[in-house]
Length: 111
Image (cartoon, rainbow, N blue to C red):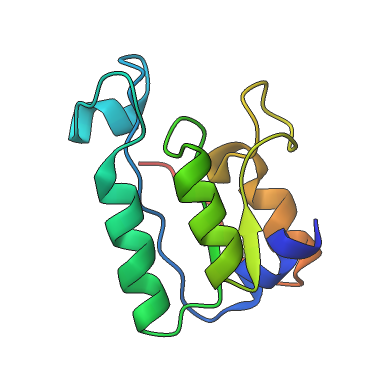
């Protein structure tokens, strides 16, 4: 949860990723079969180059290579086992609790 608090303590953050699971939202943006998208690594490299301190990797958007890069280049990495979802940490599932843990005031919106 410390990494989640650090992630949400930033005044700005972005969530990016692609999934190879056709039932997930990330698949609808970029279809990749059989491996994590090379876009994920490219996004991480760009984030590191501009000084982003923490990243959140959604389930299905990373492989060992991407995770190793993230852990080697960022102060806080949220990914893999944990969180409330059955697939691991998910900003949509665990985000509200993370915002509260970081002491961030927020409101939800219905779309």
